Amino acid sequence: MLKFIAHSLWLLWCWLELSVFTLALYILSWLPRPLAGKWYHTLSRIWCQFLIRALGVDLRLHHKNKHDLPEQYILIANHPSALEDFAIPALFNVYPLAKEGVRRWFLIGRISDKAQTIFVKRDDSASRHAALESLLEAIKEGRNIAVFPEGGCKGRRIYSSFQTGAFDVAMQTGIPILPVFLHYEDQELFEWHAPHTLLHKFWHYMTAKNNRANYYVFDAISPDGFADKTAFSEHVRENYLHWQKRYLD
Image (cartoon, rainbow, N blue to C red; front, top):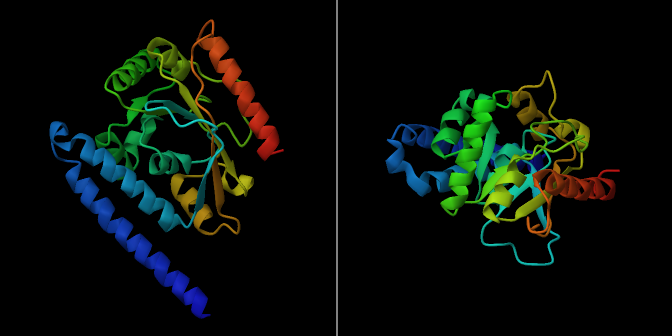
């Protein structure tokens, strides 16, 4: 009983500090963009860390890489859940590519926008082109970017193909791909699919009997030696299929 009370009080405190921090970030989001700078991006990453803690997720980062991480990289990951939208920025200093709809999420959308998230309408060729240019510009400015090459939440298994945008950026800039494989031990509960909303998923995470989330980091993959972005993406996808067999099957 005492353990339950202590845990409940801890969760209450986590949500209280998250609420206060969210309100502060929202107010600061109304500052002119030139005044926000990198410090707002840093605060948004701390906010993500607070959210993960409030949700009670046991987030574990596993370094499977044999070599040091490069100074700059293009992070990619599979996308089975909604959690990685917050967990990846909590763990890595990246500027993610997100679907345009995230901009309309209550509070979170405005905070994400001010934190310099790059948005894209996946079914709009002009938007995809603009997003590619924004990704290239971010790389030129020395930033790390994060992309889900499956093109959205496609389920707990690796999708039949990868979008080539991240690999195109890598080949144009010479910046390596940093693959991160996501494994939720309760795969069915963490998986995001219709008709679940973000609030539904938050409740699922908080009530999960097995709340372990394993994020495996592997060695960065250089674009050198690949004939084109398609060959590069297919090679990396084959690696993901191998990791899927190791960790999910």
